[in-house]
Length: 313
Image (spheres, rainbow, N blue to C red):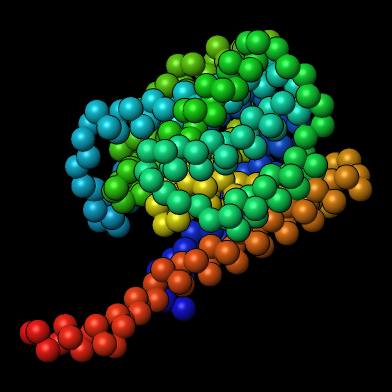
């Protein structure tokens, strides 16, 4: 395997392992210990990530190239707002509609890349994505209840998430390092209000036990790997591949939740996961096949035409 392929495989593995780990950690923190301030916790994740990367920069572990400040600020605002909107939409929508919101990110990303980046997706890729979305929908979507405010929030969350994930032409580490402070600041300011709206509790009035503090530190530590791998995957692949990977994480979280945390698990969950895994397998196969076809050398012209070209030289 080439160095690039090994880098992609490493980024994908790191993203899956870290994301599943942080979900299990946060589930224990929020469900078992009662710390339910997700938006504020996310702002702490981003701040710890920025501090870690700042230390890495001082140690010359990566080179920080200047990016237009306006672009970085807009990117940070989009990502920060998208996280806040997703959390806020959960307060207005049912769990089922919230899951549908996350599912809609893939087709909307495909639409944006087709319209604005002139990227073409084959019928096989579209079919595999459809199978994937069907499987995740069966496994995770339960009830669907619509309301105007929740629908508007979900649409805004989809738009900001998709635009934020269409990557810039810079190193993933540079983009994460320069945008993390803006994302963290937005969520740090808005987080207490969003969390209070969702939980009816004040994050600053919460009684922090040593166990809670320990899990928060662990969550922030894993978040460094999650944020870094997220930007790494988008930088090495594409926003659509990242979203596909996200649904793989959903299936793994459901499976680990059943085996480790004894969450309720039905035949519908199993069927949905199997269909989703089938869609992911098709997507990976067709992506690999099309990438190899694009990398193959172009066939020579007709021999008679080629001979006439050579004689004309």
